[in-house]
Length: 279
Ligand code: SAM
Image: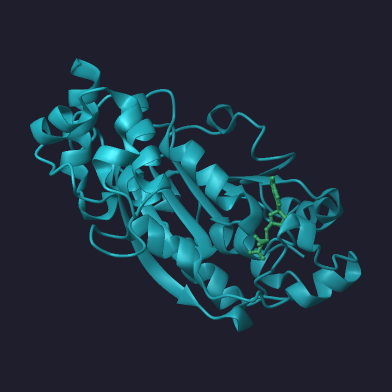
């Protein structure tokens, strides 16, 4: 065998390597190679980027990325059972490197050369934690230029939500601050084996070169977290721990102290973070 498109169907790979899906590892595999190619294309120009794939599993999306011409794929997989299946792909191309390990613990910035695109059908149990880490790196711009990620539909909706909607919250504000995020694909449970209970969606996130509005990152994060922790409360109540005269700071930021978090847009949250820090 010399060609990636000659590899056996994924069902056979799963059977041959005994890769029964484990719920504890968030394993819901995509076996349709047309679908994995489509996800790979949603990542944009991968021919001129290193792609970090989190959780390749039996390698369906990995194949998609390689066949669609990724310059290089670094695939990080926690489940050692998947490594022999991934080695079969790596035997056919020098563009694939497989790292066994936990994506939450590996220094991903150190394993790839910029520009870096992260692409993943994420394990749902660690997806939000990985995303919040990627959105909040020590310096901006981050080591990645884009993220193309599968989430539960409801989480995807929260990432792209606008003020005034029920889904608008901490993730929406932090994503909007320094990225553009949009849903590029919706997938029914039947797209996966085994099918999860919920619908899924792929979100494509591009890093902006600089934040849309200036704000101290730590304070913005803390203010937004507190504001949405009690989203039904007026902001003068939910944020009273930030400053004795929080009402003045809210007014300085153009926010009515009786407003609730879900009505405040990004620009005013940034103004509030600056007003809190300026004390
Ligand atoms: N990419 C494959 C696909 O699309 O069919 C598998 C996706 S499955 C939803 C999630 C994968 O992430 C599994 O292979 C699982 O073993 C792996 N995984 C789970 N937790 C992980 C972690 N902390 N670090 C790296 N991989 C992880």
